[in-house]
Each structure stands twice: as structure tokens, then as C-alpha cells.
Length: 141
Image (cartoon, rainbow, N blue to C red; front, side, top):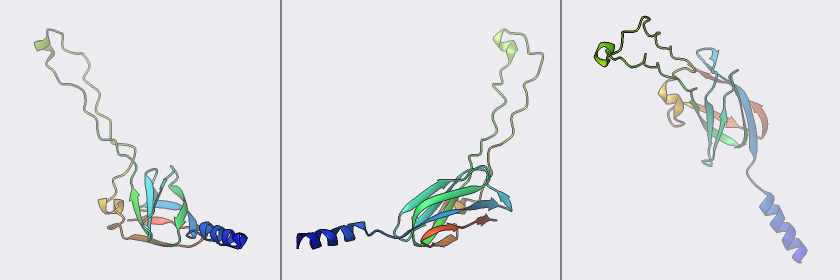
């Protein structure tokens, strides 16, 4: 009797939700995103996140089967940096510099995606996850 009860409990404990593993490529205006992250919010409110590689590819494991909402966080955009401090050398008692300061660096490191893509409720991106491995490319416009 105890054996049957133990077997029944083990069976119940071992049962969890079916999950899927999703791989794909994220593109923006036809070009691969070179960083950032993909977030899936499944219908059971579990959140799974993966980094986007420099080739635009991502893989997320153990996403609950069923409908999911998706958000995309863009790669970090480094702002233009200041060209240095602007001081009047004459007021500091030092001679004026011979060479002007170099121009500030340009923005680099990412793209500025529309803000709605960063919110699972506003992105409009969805996918129905199935059990096992699957491919889902995400095309942003």
C-alpha cells in the first residue's frame, strides 16, 4: 500500500508544465540586431530572457508551452561624449593650447528601437510556444 502511495506521489511531483526551447534571429528594418535581449512572458506569468548575439541570434530554454508575449530590449547606445572641459587658459595663467580638442566620438554600440518593443504589453509581438525545440525569427519594423 505504501509503495502505491509513494509511486503516485512521485508521479504527481514529476509532472510539470511542458516547455519549449526557442531559437531565432532578431532583425530591425531587415538587419540583424547586434545585441540586446529577448524576453518571453508566458501565459503562466513566467519570464524567460536571453541575450541577442552579435549575429542577431538568441536561444531561450524552458519556456512554458502556450501563448507568450515578447519584448525586445535594444543594445546599449553610448551617447555622444563631451569634447572635454572648456576653460579659458588665459584666466588660469596657462598658455592657450596649440591644437584644438578632437571632435567628440559618434554614437555607437546599438540602435534606438521604438519604445513599444521594450514592453511585452505594447510590443504586439507574440508567439505560441510548443513542446521541444523550435525556431522563431522576430522581425521588427
